Length: 266
Image 1 (cartoon, rainbow, N blue to C red):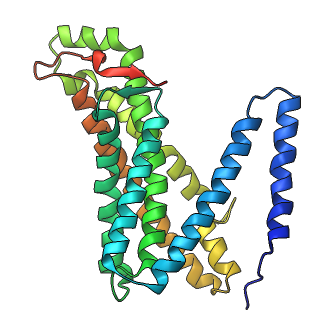
Image 2 (cartoon, rainbow, N blue to C red; image 1 turned 60 degrees about the horizontal axis):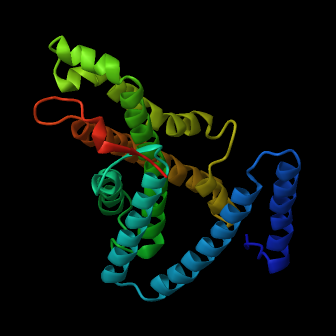
């Protein structure tokens, strides 16, 4: 089965739906029209650029370029996590906690998939490495951001209860234990929901793309199951790491709650 080529007119036609939605949102005063248009423009420009970059990478396979691309993706993902927090940590901690958590989880799980499960030759084949890492970072980014946002906001809202437990003799990890658990759960909810609905309510994007490109449905299903399991593991490990690092930063060496290390995002 040959892939049906899309023309610029086809894309322009679909963009008219976004414009129509933005106009309607403006008419009913939803205040999302401008953000919707900007997001659509960013999507078109960013995906066009990454398509051109991948075309070059596929034609010139070199580990150095793959590493550079991976680090760039990680840096941008770290910035996106920071932008999604209502209350962020001050200084470099605000950026480094999310970025470090994503790097440990996403890179580890992606390397496991490339070296042990899929085993392309060479193992850094960009056809596999870049899409896998991109999906891992994209989903882990959401989980880490949700977890950190819940952690910092809950610590701020429940500061009186936390300090009361500290005065009663609880250690820092005990005083914030419930918030830790709820924060990690919050970060995992989107991934768990997507796994529960896969194949019944919706067809996941990777599987749909492979089927449209002519891949056998059964083979596409196997790859989608692999990806969803990897995403769940990466998101879970990333959320756990981020919450652990964040909760440690909320207390000093004497187990005192340090909310002065948080600032409201601008």
